[in-house]
Amino acid sequence: MQDKRRPDRLGAAPARLMIIAIILLAQGLVVGMGWWTGSRDLLTEVVDQFNRRVEASAQDTASGVALAIAKLEADSIEPDTEGGRRIGQMLGDLKLPGQSVISIVSEDGRELHHVGDAALGASSYTASVPLARFNAVLRVQAPAEQLVSARDAAASEINLRIWLGGSVIIMLTGIVALALISLHERRLVRANRVLGQQVISKDTDLLAAREGMILGLAKLADYRDTDTGQHLDRICEYSALLAQAASRRYPEIGEHFIRSLKLASSLHDIGKVGIPDAILLKPGALLPNERTLIEKHTTMGAQTLLSIRERFGEDELLDLGIDIALCHHERWDGTGYPNGLQGNEIPFAARIVSIVDVYDALTSVRVYKPAMSHKRAVSILREGRGTQFDPVLMDIFLSIADEFDTVRRTLQPLELTNPPLLRVA
Ligand SMILES: [Fe+2]
Ligand SMILES: [Fe+2]
View 1: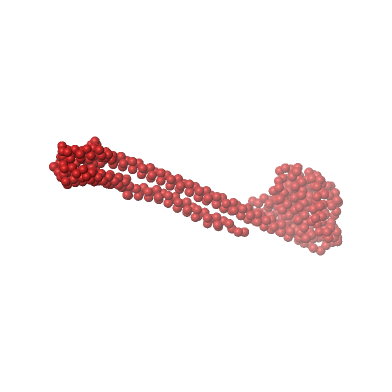
View 2 (view 1 turned 135 degrees about the vertical axis):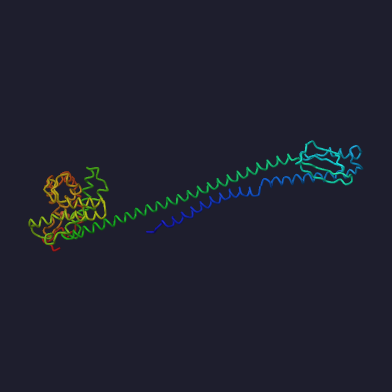
């Protein structure tokens, strides 16, 4: 049988490794993002960039204003002169970006012009352009407050992106991990199912092998004094047939019991192995000591099966075989052997085998007798109702006697139904 466990086991390891790798990768990404953000001081970079933009903007503004002043071609920049007023008017018309402030300061430090309302602190940014023609300097200042709000906005945005990015990575990691775990579990379930089927198959194989060995062992003993071993085949079939019919009256008899009984019934005469041929195959009547010896096949059979059970441990089939081997010659009225059990003291399985064994013995050839007709055998069995046989089981047997005849005709070799009086084994 092909072993399917190996591919499943091989598939499970990469799946586990993949899950671990993906989780580690995702965690690494999150940690890496944190490290990258911290190591590069991303916020500072953004603020610096913004600062440069503000400075560049101030510089552009300053250069543009200086160019505009030059184009006015004013002769003076002093506020109280004609040129100064034109410059002041032009500056007043300017639309300044944000809260910028423009001022023109003379060489000696006087502020000649001032546009813009913001009170600029020391942290403001300044772009300066010299107005060489007027010995003055044009300054464009951007307030630090702009930078603070820009930095806060940038920080919020960075935090939001990191949070969202981390969340998405963790969520994706979880989804992928769950998918892989689910896949892994499905593979495990499939592998377990295959293993279960293999165990059942092996159990079935072992049971079949065990049943074959038991039947073979029983047949070995049976070859001693019966036909070609088909006596046992018939006993098995008859036992199952009677048990099946009895189950209609006794609901506690299930299919499992019938199946076990069918096999265990083959062990009923296994103790005959220990009986000498001279006695077992003796054509005439047995002497008292010979009868005593032949009756020992019950206890010898039970002992043999007990010793097997001691090695195997508890075994339902062997237990049933022991009951049958020991008690199949007990009689309902207590006059049987080996223990003189009476009525329900006799195990139920043994009571069944007792009936079918006698039926088969009567309808089969033995070295000391020819086969009896079905009708005659049934008649003799009926006479044993309540004395030799369980009366209820006998009634059940009588109700299905025709079925016994059918089985007998199927399993009994034709040439053996009318044999010579004596036969050499
Ligand atoms: Fe027997
Ligand atoms: Fe028998």
